[in-house]
Length: 604
Image (spheres, helix red, strand yellow):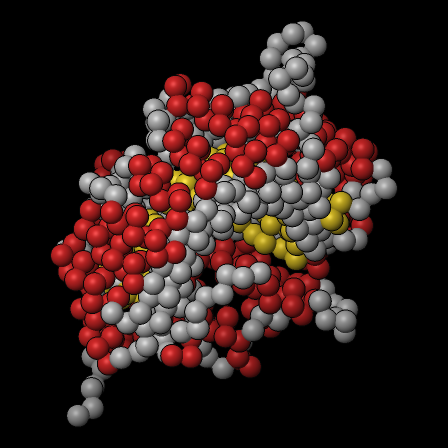
């Protein structure tokens, strides 16, 4: 039987087309009954919804009704649809993966901002072609992008202006707050295309030439009053570049800029005189009275550069809360900071510090045990530190022993430290047992600890059992060599009302003992949400043990990763997947096939 469309649906379809191509019906649409008006709003394409909302002769309401002024004027809520809900539905339809990452926002703004970003990305691909020699604004937008916003008719009948990048930037650029630009878009023409934007965040990629620098600086100056976040990725940085950037951001002759978040990552600092470059960056940092986070990651910085930057931060009056210096090669950068150093004293004798710093990331910097010893005295000057990342540094047990006095002092002073990452630090059970003993006494226990990829062995099990009796919530024990005996020891340790929320015990080769431990843990950690137990050589009989525990736990666990174990696929797995689900997703993540069940090889 053929479904015959109703008169209402036919009328709405006609209105959708008319709203895109003309304005004659708009006054009549606003007079529609509430039910019809809301039905129309819910099914309009973006272009039509944009026109309907922007041309309204009265204020648009949210879900909570009209303002008092509108009520005094006799205006009724019934004339206004829930536009934000309609924009949210359109966003989720076009970008379903992104929608999960977006917090509640002005969905109209984020829709057009993302649309403009898509148009700019497509234009950049064309402009990068060697054969391209035209204007950016004349680049034509792809048909599928146009169809998403409501142009569903024959494209050959569409006015040529609608096809161009310039049209989309002029019409919707005013919604752009956060953009990502490749170098080919950092030219003077882009300033004209984005003249209506009020950028708050800008990510710039692959800046190499003076032409790109000039275009970028003009764009920065154009948005200097609103821009608060600036990030450079895969760029070539020089002292003149930094000086020009700083000058562009300091608007109206001001000596300071308004950047809150500044980042340079995966970039090269090409300059013969690194002292001059460090001075230029230091000048930029000193001009940032509002600077809150600084990221200089994976730039191949050396110890002298890092020392200069850190000294500048100590001398400045900025309220820095996050400092990321990871993935460089700065061993020895703290050599001037030790117990007999006066480097923490200003010329007037006042102690210099970073009182607002909450996050310090130093992972992958080739830091040695001596660096850890000097770091101890630096950390004292960071009284608000909450997150410390020292992963991928060969500080060894001697380095940990140097830091233990800092943690011991923290245990007495109710330190705000909550997260500690010591993954891949070439630690042994001796150093970690000493550390865990101190961490177990913290007046304010840690929330997160990573000891991943350190060869600790089963000897660390007893100290671990004592430690997770604290309020630790996230614990990463990936690849620490627990083995069957380590899991057996952990299982024998008393567990009672643990606070664990997430636990990673993957790549520990624990076999069936992993499953026995896990089945007990699930029952004694009422807040446990996720466990990664992948690559532990668990046999097929592990599954009934884990499933029995999950059934008894009554649903608080949301995910158990069992990939990479010797659990060959069986038809019964489908039943298990169907039985154990959370929000429609399987709790058990099982190997997909026998071909994928190759034991994890943790040999280098």
